[in-house]
Image 1 (cartoon, rainbow, N blue to C red):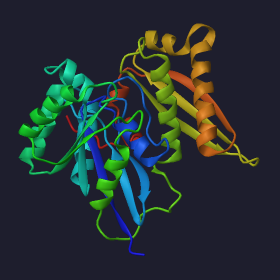
Image 2: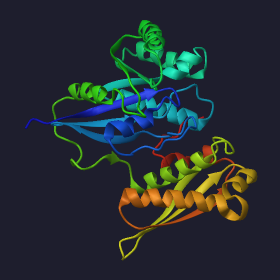
Image 3: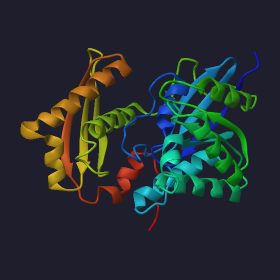
Image 4: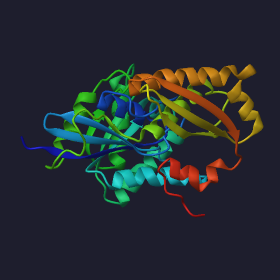
Length: 305
């Protein structure tokens, strides 16, 4: 059997549904998902098989006009993932484009197309979240975006319910070069366990505190202790920027952080297939988003000011 293997980068504006798409393409959860924009902070690799072809899907951070050092690092990581890939898929939120053609998502998508054109980088276009939309509402979007960029292929998909996902996967497989597989057949992701555990907890924070907590927290797995009974003890620190945010995360009598811990522990036990002892600590660090060690923990390069 002749093996094929390569990388496919999923790029797009924040909240276009890139993580949901990668999870759907891989068939298991490899990237965290929340309604909050800019949830994904570093490139996550999910591994999928199509016949004799292994595809490494790269879930990248949303590309937008950066304002902070962390923003710049995330956008740089997204473009680096696209630059190293064998093929690129630009994902756009069809519902958002249809209802707000001059909003942030549309402007960010158009800027991405301009950057692809400037770098002579070919890509496929995937309009996401089409469930419930009329085809007559979708065709103008396809025409408008196709006029701005030259796309190799156009897909109409719903990452959430699976519409069109198989077509995307088959097309990407056809683009992969001949070469040996990079991962064992049963491996679905390339992300360190400590980092995945921190990401799962951060997802639960966002899902629980979406309205109350701004884009201002980070989670790190500070300690990882393998126990003789096969279980693992994980100590995680949740970093926030202000005392008021700490109070929100803790909740009355510590109820909120306890619930977050329970939700994260249950999912981690399912992912790791073993008992997990999870302990969460909340710490105020006003400038955590500027600290070099936090960038390193996320696998991001530290942009110099």
